Amino acid sequence: MYKTKMNEIPPKFVGVISGKLDAIEMHPVHMAYGSMLENDESVITVLVRENEPKSFEAYGVVDFDCEAGILQRWTEAMSYPDALIEMGNRIKE
Image 1 (tube, one colour):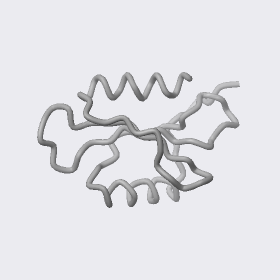
Image 2 (tube, rainbow, N blue to C red):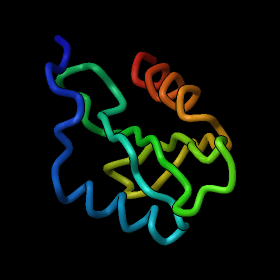
Image 3 (cartoon, one colour):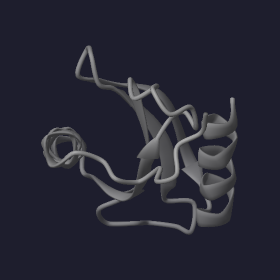
């Protein structure tokens, strides 16, 4: 069975993710669960942007491991459209 709402992330995770990203001068743009499967809520995939972009390739995608509380699997220096595609590809994996 698949989730019907991918982006209803609990506030406790939104706060933790935002804090970790702020510490490295990044800003979350979009967040969604990293799996479309209904009972899989172990990873949150986040499209991020540099706080002070220096170019059009100021976006990236990172996964947040909810159990370990860490950011992992970082992809950076992407345009916004490329980052959206990367985010979608990760969710479909």
